[in-house]
Image (cartoon, rainbow, N blue to C red; front, side):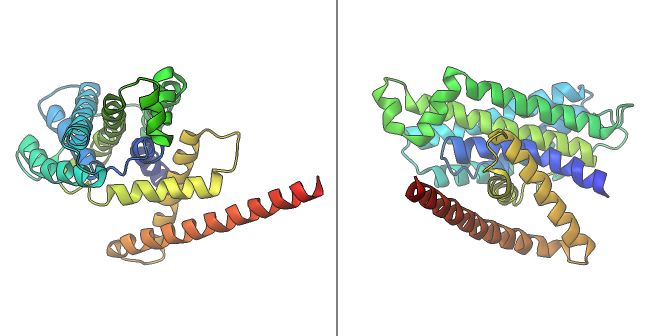
Length: 287
């Protein structure tokens, strides 16, 4: 039970890293992820059924997610549509596109060669996938491009003042975010043995819950990178959901559980911030 929870948590952690990129780094509330997550699963499953290798299938998923992010970005920056509405538009359109890609609402992968029916243990495959995604994002954020993305989310006027094209940066950031989300969807479809058009429902809620949990519980630990905090938050979230199911709650109750977790964590974060503020004031008075 614990192994299964850990495996699912790590797969969803890749998706949470994508949402972290858009939500925290770009300060962009991107609803596209509810469509790009199943898009990754649809592309990966379709390619595997057509006898392509699992790695090629995941690369296809990543490219599909990047394209979805680019479309959201273009709608936002070119048509001056709000970030929330632009994401909803693309998310809605992706539902039909995902069915077109799969040809039906569900594609089973039983009997097909994929990442999780080889000799390598699933946890090894998943851990390697998460490390590749995490370390790649860590490296990217240390580059000049990564610093520009962070600055864009913090102060868009600064980017404009530096002579950088904030529109292109925003589109590129959304491409990176949604490529990670689609990668997670591609891995999950192989892990569970099928891709389903409805597998992305509530993705944004899961990701935001993971980000909030990680930030609340581990965000003050300065020795942890932001990406590490997100991965840990996702594992905690999946553990809570697993416990909720084990104590007898129905799967239909999980949305309510997730909402309550988010409210609790937001409240807890406010209290932690108050404690830190008081300590800082006391320290300043003492000095």
